[in-house]
Amino acid sequence: MNKTTTDRIKQLLTTQKTGVLATLSPTYPYTTLVAFVIIDDWRSLLFMTPRETQKYENLQNNNAVSFLIDNRMNTPSDFSQATTLTILGKAAEVDKQDYQESYLQQHPELSDFFHHPKSAMMKVTIEYFLLVKDFQTVVKVQPQDL
Image (cartoon, rainbow, N blue to C red; front, side):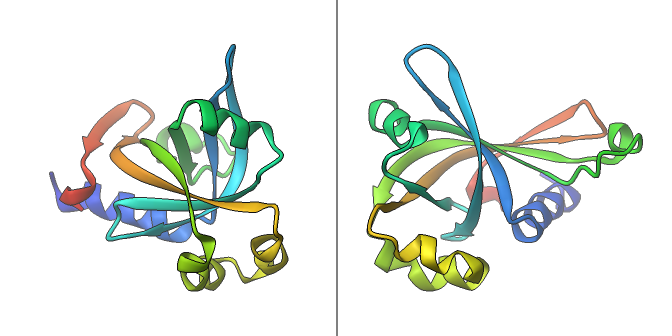
């Protein structure tokens, strides 16, 4: 593991505020954009969801998730300069009050959503990261290696 790889991962995790969450319905993968926060020394990811959503239902039936973060700018240079990070892990609902400070520090604009009684806080325990750089170079990284 080199410092450039770990620095790229940490940069994406700290500069991006949203990512694409993929869950699995009974028939298809299901994706949605969510606001996230990284905690526990790069070992966990938090996001909020209303309990009455497809993603919440999917997570009740299968807690495996894939989470994509990227820095693309929708320009031709993305093919040579964009970096993407896929996070693979397992999600579980946690007491949102335990993470209120961490979440709202990163996303103060989501305070009403956080405090809504039907909103659930989900914590993803990260199994590993897949960093894709230069459009085709893939590097697998364990959270403890950051």
